[in-house]
Image (spheres, rainbow, N blue to C red):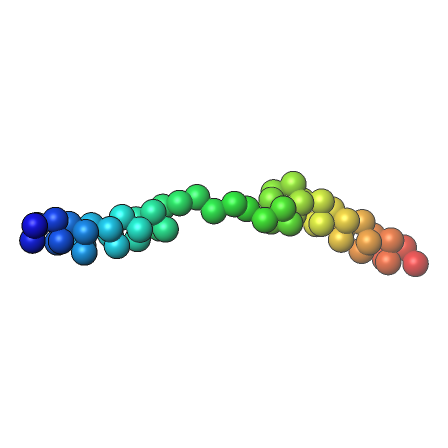
Length: 53
C-alpha cells in the first residue's frame, strides 16, 4: 500500500509536469508565417507609397 502511495504522490505530478511541458501549443492566427508575411508586405507597400508622395 505504501508503494502505491509513493507512485501516486510522485508519479501523478510528474506525469502532469511532462504533459504540460511537451503538450503542443496552438499558434495564434496572427503569429503564423503567412500572417506575418502579409503584414510585412503591407507595411512595405505603405512605405513605398509614402516615399512617392
